[in-house]
Image 1 (spheres, rainbow, N blue to C red):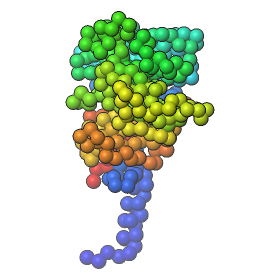
Image 2 (cartoon, rainbow, N blue to C red; image 1 turned 180 degrees about the vertical axis):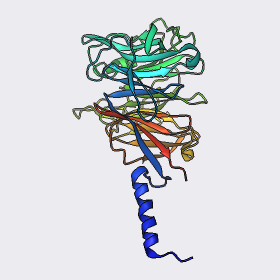
Image 3 (cartoon, rainbow, N blue to C red; image 1 turned 90 degrees about the vertical axis):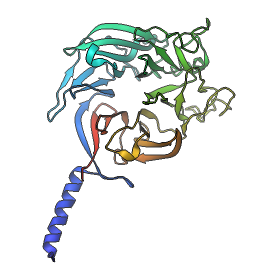
Length: 374
């Protein structure tokens, strides 16, 4: 049947209008839509999904929020959050639900603890009941104290055996301590659900080492995850260059500040070495820096072509990057969702495979990216 020009034109305009309203596309990728679920968040840092569909969101200023899902979300302030040291990069960091949350209501929080002259990264557990924290237990506080409000790390992940990994940054002015076993600075630490160092930690039998240390030689770790098969990935900020993704194994040395591709902020060389015996090379290096923040291992039925890849959000580059992995090796590093030209702090995947992103800053947002159904 022959269709007249006016009808074709009208149909074309209607389709064009619908497309512009709710969908975007990335080269080589099917169309998807971006929804803004929540606005006016104050420097959001971390997101967790509650079983009923609500969200837990931490804000750097020390607020823990439960945000209801639905057409008209409400922000509910969780009571009982401990005192937080809020300054520069210091504040409330990660939130993680215990693997048995539906039975025990336990969550984990990391935050900056102390004061200007003496502060540290701290990890606690608590029970979340009726929008209030109770039965708070301090599981870990980094040692030694530091007097800088930078480089806390603060990402948490729970391993299959229930133990917890926590990133602890180098404190900015204390970078040499990243190589010292009597300091938690510049380390990833591992504790059990009671805060004790497990007996199989790599340096637990060394009387000159802190027993919680799991890996050393880190700068400012911004992401930490464990895959279903048990592989642990981490990313961290370098100085000017030298941002990294690493595969973390207990007892390994990841080099900072002895090896790095970066240089100091004043342009001076930090080290003459980019390789050194006994120190591991990163899986990915970004020089110049992109300032990576959170990272997820994609699993889901929505963006199936990305199954098993790493998705990384960044601050300085204002990007989402996909690290295409094949048998654990990087075959491609590409920027996706290029229209999201904003600083991004966290990224998560829901059970349907949709991608959630927290944007950074005083007017932060929670975005949901999903594939259009055809």
